[in-house]
Image (cartoon, rainbow, N blue to C red):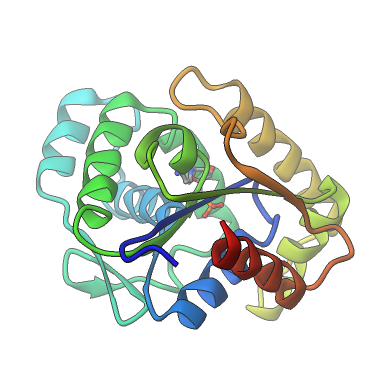
Length: 218
Ligand code: DC
């Protein structure tokens, strides 16, 4: 294995990226950066402060005084652990809108590149292999059928006590897929040099093993 490795894992919502990325990071003893959580944290702050997403001046000011970091597996927004607060259905919707804004992407992509500058990391998101860590040592593109991705997200929300209909989650996943694929800035796209893995009907353990195998032999 190479001495410093950056592993990019991209794919649509609910494909299992974060579960797999966390496992890979743990197995290799390196840091895990959940870039989706960073977009969610910005959405959470906007919502808390009731900032209009179209108010560029206020948004710019807010971003200049926003600090996001990962410590011991927690996401820290301005000194506060926001792990659970950013996992609601409302934040999922808002994060999708927020992630299409240039000033937000500029700020978060710069932070993400800094996080992968001097150490080995597993980073998951939508544009890691194509934009954030274009020279990552390993790239994976993880997919799954939309119906299965919706079911996984729905189960997560139900477990957290949200009352939500599976059909609603499925409809929202399709809208978010569309936003992620069609947006002008760094849309979701498989990097040419990424290994594609379909997780439909496959366990997170199996996908993790497959990734570790690729890393061992490449
Ligand atoms: O993976 P997730 O559902 O937590 O991501 C939240 C939102 O952020 C989602 O709408 C896609 C967007 N996102 C992005 O545009 N670029 C990334 N690198 C990661 C997430």
